[in-house]
Length: 295
Length: 146
Image 1: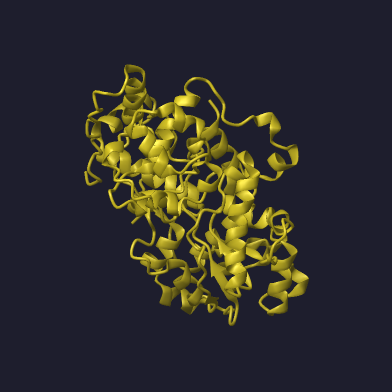
Image 2: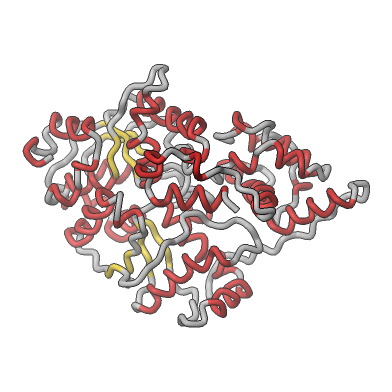
């Protein structure tokens, strides 16, 4: 297996706190990979219209880049990039005519041959590293940290690209390997409001309120995320959501890779708690998982 | 080369008593979505699980029912396509295996391809745009602007 890491736009700008620890963790875990030298935006959403091939060019071009670098697997950390790349891959693998049309359009590139597997970082940890091997590398177990896992939409739907098709709880297993305590909550796989937070803020806020309320009800001390758009709706905009009233209480949000970085004992400048909210920093200091001087 | 089987849309048989304008619109929805609205048995599961249904002027089930009668314009007016965030919850729960988000993507595209924006970018507050990640903007603009 030769792994290409596809970062995506948000990872290199606003979501450094999602990326940096994840990349270094692969080195710690002994996973060989190369970051794609050339890549472009995946398009963020998978086009659903039968006649809309042009929007599949961007994700397929990224698969060509991985193919050019001699890789057979593309791993993403961002949930939305995963969904878009994985679905475009399935589409062209299953439809020779569409693949040929896209290949002809990208006449300056080598043809995409359909040989790339697209996987998410959590899948890589589960299937190629293993929870026991991850646990063996943990130097600072997150003992007693009650975390509500949040999957959102794009890691799980539609079924053909779900990273957890048998509902075995990949995020829960990940948290257990780090020593944390996953707490069940009813909105773990619901929509966070997605891009509607921009287009229709009232509806977006209602969705975010549902998720925050669900984490509150479950007694979670933190909400763990894998998507920069979920982070925007549930973290960055959380104070607006809580201010709407009702019974909502603030709940710190963290990317799953920040917890990974802390548990593996990585340098603080890799898990970037400075980009998390003050509640998240306070929680981790209070629990003695990080030193106050480092955040 | 391994892969998923090609999704070959089943030709949709539109009842003969639907007037020609509506027939054309419904045929376009079928062409764009690759889905057959007549496979829907109106159980309402899609509406029960839809996170945005309260913002639509009627439910997704009703939307598909109107489409079965060729009343595409009513579904556009109900803003179902505009509020659907393509979370795909309806699709994974549909007992008939209908890819419901594709149907409402097709309805949304009927507006967008008439060069009609479903959001006004200038109305999004500057501070919102400054704070939002790129994927929020790319997604919203892709889904809701012509």
